[in-house]
Image (tube, rainbow, N blue to C red):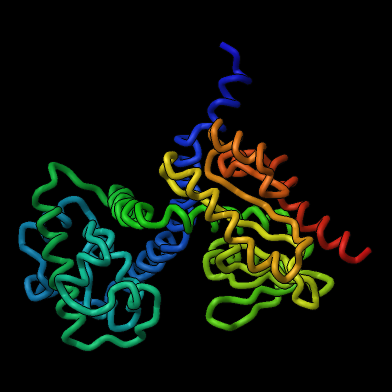
Length: 345
């Protein structure tokens, strides 16, 4: 087998682009859930177990057989059952018990009402007694059914259930976020390779943070919330739409524009080509000499032929190649550096 030929064909395939993009999307979303942090926080509660009253499990929605099963398997109650005091003191830990119960945010919200996502994100610092009671009874009832119905269960199994629950939720998000995932992947590549140029980050909530190497991981985790990267020399990388990325000089003049089309339907590739050409109109009106970059999910032979014939863009990249090739990523990111250097001269 010709390994190089196989590898080249793999990188050029739409399926490879889909699964590579999906993998990066899942990693970002799983980190965003901060599930490991929640697991560690709940583990701390075990050290102060005497602060939680379990004398009447039935009043908390815990079935007697499920309670006995947990005791038999030596699973600490705090690791598997939700206690009202936890939600009253640390509401965001709802994400821990919801994922143990293998129920989505949307599903739990339908059963108990309220904004489950807001609670888990820490936006709701105080829950009413009624809300806490509804949540606790609902989750513990589901967990009880799970414990009673399982052939066997162990405390070591719980993180597996939790990440399975998270994965199901993320899969639902993925089905509606292919385009956004492509844009986030491009932002991540730029941040990774331009870290030496970064000075400040402007977020979508209108706040700003001075860039430091210590915040780099947080920046990658929150890449969807980035509105502007302020670079050395007064240059800005603006993330919006039409185009998705625009490098502006200190006067606001666009120097480099990037449009990302990560649509999943190969039959629509030519239609997306036309949409990409239109996306650059705003920046071209401001600066006819702006350099344009088209990032497409996969370069089909027909799409490659059309682009080679009409040359509508200065540069074209395959997203699948960008996701896996460090060399291609450096070439792509260096377009930003070259545009700034050329402008200075």
